[in-house]
Image (cartoon, rainbow, N blue to C red; front, side, top):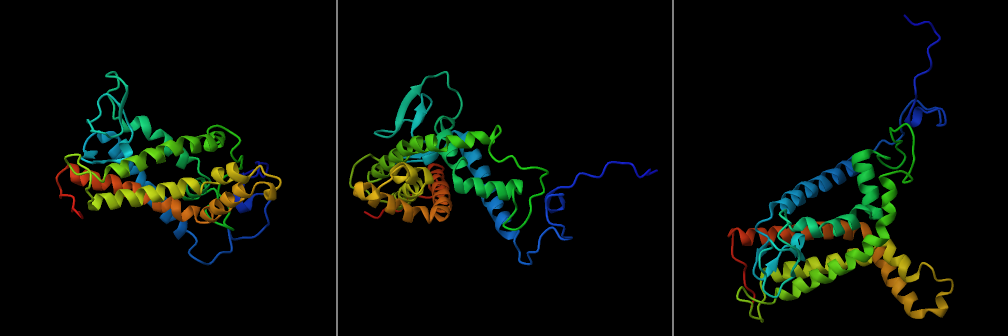
Length: 273
């Protein structure tokens, strides 16, 4: 039985005492939920696929193609790849998939990326769900507490992403060999790898950390014309960072899928010359 002395229920979102007193949670009449729902679905699909492939520890090499999920292959239990990124830095004690040794770097780079933060904050945590739509959480602490405080490691993951992109470029060059490791070959897989390499570099260099490293600390651009020009180029890439984030995410998954289909004998790599 109510006595009239109970404390008021805790209000959140737009109904918090500090928010404007309007009956509706938001005033948007469009289908604002489509974008975060599509983002969540796309990211979830990649998470499921990449997790399966990372733990599979099989079908990641079909000469001369190596999956970007397994490159460089740093364990002794790697499939031998003649002239490829096969460096046994971890001995026989490592019994898990070698992909787990390298994916931490591109994963960390993307996980802490400014665009991806926005994408999965909205898509999975509804923080906030969309512009002008209040989040349902009782309070907002930003990225000041664990684990979100680790997002500040993004600039360091950028440094790790550069050698990974360089190694993937090396892998793309190796695709100009045939299955017998003789140079002068070009197959459909070569084009797949080249496109993936270009998109990986475009996404990496369009990173906000890259833009800041090149020109963020300069006080006088006129005294640094070369860095200013580079800053301008990176700035134009940065304007398309979201597009490049999705394009490179899709391309790296398709690149791995192409190698998987070749390794499992689903089809033979069409030869161009």
